[in-house]
Length: 103
Length: 268
View 1: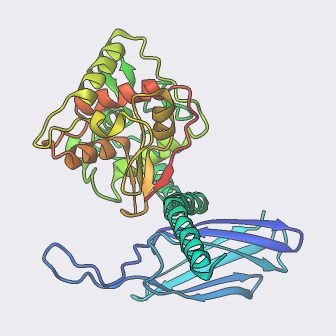
View 2: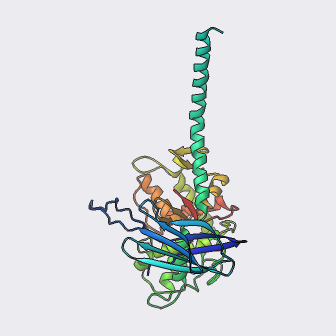
View 3: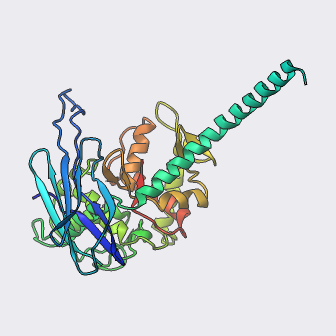
């Protein structure tokens, strides 16, 4: 499995703010190596965040997203103690899931 | 007012406005860059390297199969908190003034039994062990005051050597560090140049290193940055962990003492 993500989730009443730092090279496919050959594209394509079985965020990413992406968002309906699960899948089929308890 | 005069007055006013906008345009650019930097503070990818550093710190490695948990960074074996803010310093066991990087390498070789090559492998590339460990050590000093009084005779000597190196002009461009870093309010394109000869300049600068360089997708350690400065001056390559590089850090950290360490920073 790929490198772990760093997730923080904080509840303020009904609103939960989630911040995720993902470890990924996010290679665009446009760069060339020393020999002049294009370095193959390798980037996260899908991100999905669930809370208690409900999808709270779903994203389609492309090569425009920087390396080691940082995602910050808020959603309604989560509470302290609930679990938030973040999953990403990249264009090579590699994926990573990490969970955290809302503080 | 006759029409032609009104027209001239309007053009003059417009030109005046245009001039004001272009001068303000540069400051506006700096403002926007500051805003961008503020936004980046949250979610600094250096936290990922810190996590890797934590893994390496507790991993048994090398011929001795030991972890780094007994590594002495100046405050006693295993004491991480606040240690980075007091480096470089003199170490009795090696008889040398050492910075964070050379001290970590001492621990990796002496405690763990890793070879010098293994310990310093890929020091200049993203994803190295040294990058992860320095990020860990620096993060554990976040919020501490930089405290490098240089009281020990070897430390004072290194400050003097560092100052000498800082001001010495050399290389094909006849540059010294002072060429770019000894005046206030200078910049190269949109990169501000800190005046490292003053307490203020040194404090503002040294409190931000090591830093995640967005353009490199990597945390750069202080040695990495200094050795790259030398490359930019077209100096011959300085050896990693050499005394010259440690001496430069000693000079700058002494000037920077009193500043609150905000590392790991995040930069262009």
